[in-house]
Length: 185
Image (cartoon, rainbow, N blue to C red; front, side, top):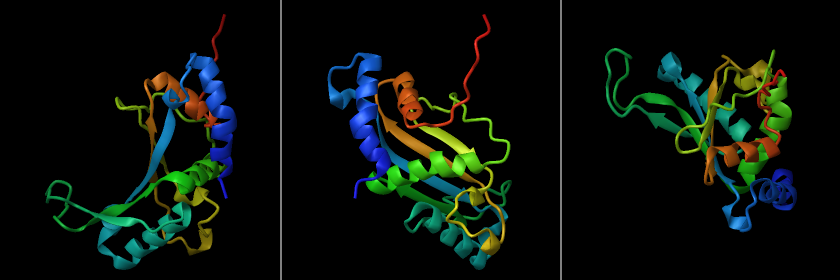
């Protein structure tokens, strides 16, 4: 079964972006190639039960098992040791990626308390869009009663395309809730 957002991308979004940017070739339209979810553990990385709790929560949110990331070198100022657990990470592609973006935009982000919108300035020099979420419990898959600690997570959306304007237009077509700037005349 094709995800709803992928179907919408193929039928509607591609045509809208072709008209908006006067692009003749369909392959020049920006597209999302992968979504990366990252949850740092901080001081909880020592406790194996808390690490397992993070793995369980991240697998519920993403739909696939995350990998456990380790520190590459010891830094005394950050109290890290080489080889100890740093966090958990998931990379989503294809169907799971589109399903996650659909759930993120339509279900999870509207559940954030006092949510004003996402900034359009979060694109890096490569055109990837990154933002953080302070509470991972905004996803309906996570059972609030079983969560031992509310954690934040970082979401990076990797987009293939020419410029940041067209990439922002792609995310806007996917109904990302960007902050709209009102121009006063």
